[in-house]
Length: 355
Ligand SMILES: *[C@@H]1O[C@H](CO)[C@@H](O)[C@H](O)[C@H]1NC(C)=O
Ligand SMILES: *[C@@H]1O[C@H](CO)[C@@H](O)[C@H](O)[C@H]1NC(C)=O
Ligand SMILES: *[C@@H]1O[C@H](CO)[C@@H](O)[C@H](O)[C@H]1NC(C)=O
Ligand SMILES: *[C@@H]1O[C@H](CO)[C@@H](O)[C@H](O)[C@H]1NC(C)=O
Ligand SMILES: [Zn+2]
Image 1: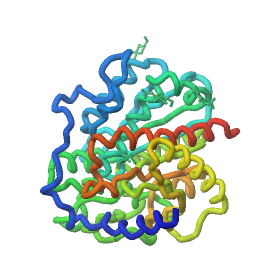
Image 2: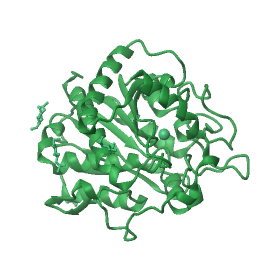
Image 3: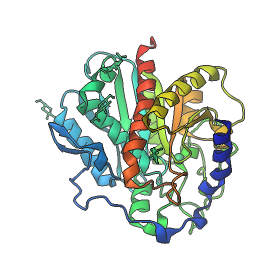
C-alpha cells in the first residue's frame, strides 16, 4: 500500500505538464457522429453489454439523461442547474423511487475537469446499473440519487473537438490575460479559496479565477448542492487519473476531526473495488495523496455545506502508458465496474445512516 502511495506521488507532477503530452499518439474520440446515439442505451428492455462502453460526446450525455427520464418516467427526473460560460446547459437527473417521500440522498458528479473523460463514462454506467440492473434495485430503495455527469461542458467539448486541447482542464472563461483562458472550476469554490495548490495566474492549469464562485458553472453547482443539502448524506465526485479514494482536506495538510470515519468507509469501498480485477486504489486525505489544492468542490461540500461524507474518486489512467486521461476503450468496463462497486458501498452507508 505504501509503495503504491510513493508511486502515485512520484507521477503526480505529470498531471500539470501539458507540454510533455504526446499528441501524435493520441487517438480521436471514438464517439458516434449521430448525437442521438448513446452507447449506454439502445432499447428499453435491454441495456448495452458493458463490453461496448465508450467515451461519449456532450450531446450524447444530454440525450442519455433525457432518454432515461423518458424511459423511467416517474422514477427519473432530469433537471438543469444552470449554464456554462458559452451557454451550454449543465444537466443532471434525480433517481427517486418514491418522489413524494423525503429520503436521504447521495450526490454523484463528474466532468468538472474537462480532460478527465472517464468520469462521465462511469457516471452514466452508474445510472444504467441503478435503473436497468435488477440486482441493484435495493440501492434505490430508501435513497435518492442525484447524478450530474458533466459539470464543465465547455471545457469538455473543447478537449474533444480540438485535438491539441486534449488535456484542457479548465472552463472557457476569458481572463485578464488575452491569450490565456479558463478557470480551474475545482479551485473556484468558496472554502479557503485562494489557498495553497491554486494559482492566481490565468495561464496556469490551476487558475482559481478572480474571486470565489466567479464562474457560472461553479455557482450553478454550488446553488444546486445547497438546495438539496438537507437531504444529502454523501457527496462523491469523479476525477481521474490518480487511482485513489480521497477525502478532505485539499487545502491543508491537516485532516478533519472525523477523518477516521471517512477513512474507514473509504477502505471498505476500496476493498470491494479491488475484488473486481485486483486493482488497488490508494486511500487517504487529498493533500497527502495528490497534493494541495484549495478551492475544490469536495472541501467546500464538507467545510462550507457540512456534508460529513465527501469523497473524490480518482479513477485510474496513469498506469496505462501514455493514456493518463484516456484509458483504452477496452479497459472502461473494468474501470466502471470497480468504481460502481465502491459507489455501492458508499450508497449503502448513506442509506443506513439516520438523517
Ligand atoms: C411522464 O408521464 C407524464 C404522465 O403520463 C407525462 O405528462 C410526462 O410528459 C412524461 N414525461 C416525460 C419526460 O416523458
Ligand atoms: C448487475 O449487478 C450485479 C450486482 O451488482 C452484477 O454482479 C452484475 O454483473 C450486473 N450485471 C450487468 C449485466 O451489468
Ligand atoms: C441488495 O441486493 C443484493 C443482490 O440482490 C444483495 O447482494 C445485497 O446484500 C443487498 N443489499 C442490501 C443492503 O440489502
Ligand atoms: C485486469 O487484470 C488483468 C490481470 O491482472 C490485467 O492484465 C489487466 O490489465 C487488468 N485490467 C484493468 C483495466 O485494470
Ligand atoms: Zn480532476
